[in-house]
Image (cartoon, rainbow, N blue to C red; front, side):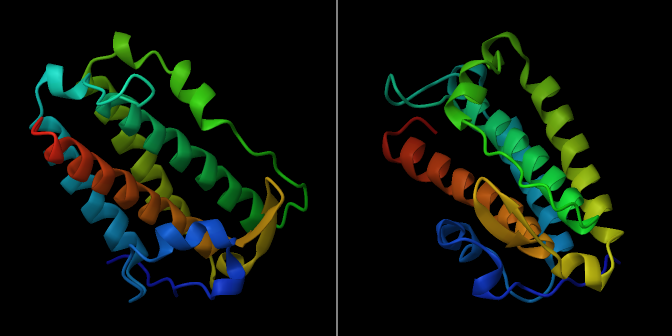
Amino acid sequence: MNKLIDFPSPNEYPLYAEMYMKLVRKDETLLKQLKDNLEITKEFVSSLTEDELNYRYSDDKWTIKEVLVHIVDDERIYAYRALAFARNDKTSLPGFEQDDYAKYSDTHNRKIENILEEYEAVRKSTIALFNGLSEEALKRIGTADGNEASVRALGYHIAGHELHHMNIIKERYLKIGLL
């Protein structure tokens, strides 16, 4: 089975990340949570119709497909940050504008199967990355977008960020009777 990764201390991640950290189990099972969430999310998203996947409950809100691509983009960026910090790269990494990423993601031209294929590939890569890191590397701290975080905190951020968005989909879309 995958290695256990200690939950980070509050001083290992920025305050904004607390909203994600509170959604994950703190029992050291980060890699299992990432693997389980992959299957749960794929099963849920695969159960939706094309109309449901392309629905936006307000003109300024993302479709479910856009939310899923956002989860993938965020994971890819945070996994890169984890790699850089784990390798003790002292470069201060930039932030990213999530709304621009969503705007230019071309999800309206993509089939859900293609999005899920990318999502699965990124998730498996993230799990492999974290599974291969030493305890020392997991505790290293780096800076991105002006915020300090440990490598292990970035992993827990990835898991919590996905749960945050899946909760929003289920709460907001279920409330309006879409799903």
